[in-house]
Length: 193
Image (cartoon, rainbow, N blue to C red; front, side, top):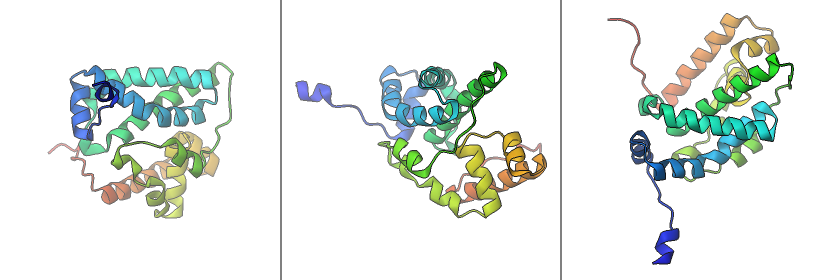
């Protein structure tokens, strides 16, 4: 009997999302156990402080808990959504630190660090996104790397590459359209009929 008590639950993504949307504590525990390490790694790369990263990770999971109802599987995987919540929370914290005069230079996240921090159990999370991004044209690949893997804002990427902000946004938009085609994610048009 004791052996069964130590066995952890495994959830398929749709089941996990459904349980999370119904405020299931075991599902949230599972989410934290399986996703906190890679999210912490990405957060730490942005905020550069272990103490701050721990605080941002906690804030991230509070936001996830409060906003899981807004997750839409048609727009991407659960992990992608979690990663965006963590990244945005970390960037917000970074900006506060900059305003307070505690500026720290952004540092690139190495490919080996990304792969080692993404040791997740769900099979969908093992997709080699970096390899897929590598197939993009150089000007788009560089921007996706800066903005989505290294945490730069569009404005920071514009300044770093000495490109107009409009060019940066257009190239990122085109790259995301190409990536949507790869993943066959079709987002309904927002234009009025």
